[in-house]
Length: 148
Image (cartoon, rainbow, N blue to C red; front, top):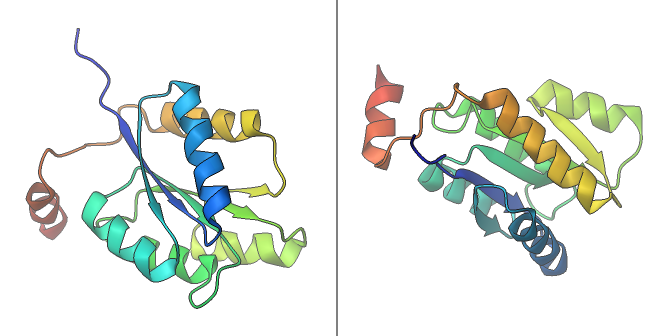
């Protein structure tokens, strides 16, 4: 029986305290996760291109490039298009959720949220993707697969 390969999670938030709290929560969850972080939209796109995350926890309201713009770019890139994107937002209006769905977000969590709910949402994403995610050992393999 082989061990479960860890899922890659990218946390994108312009607030350092939020990034650290999310990372701490995920570490305590004991889920098979490898966590990386980005402080803004541009950095998120660079990290996502390099790391091919399975799950992206994406803040909506960030300076420069907002979460909606990041989400749309992740969906348009073959290396990141299949990632589960969970938008984290203080916005509560229906228009924000509709915009998120339009650009390809898989789900939303409204801040403040319960940490147990975040872990449950990530667990659901892992369970839904079980058997669907192919995790190459080398990024070059991803490029070859995506180019076919």
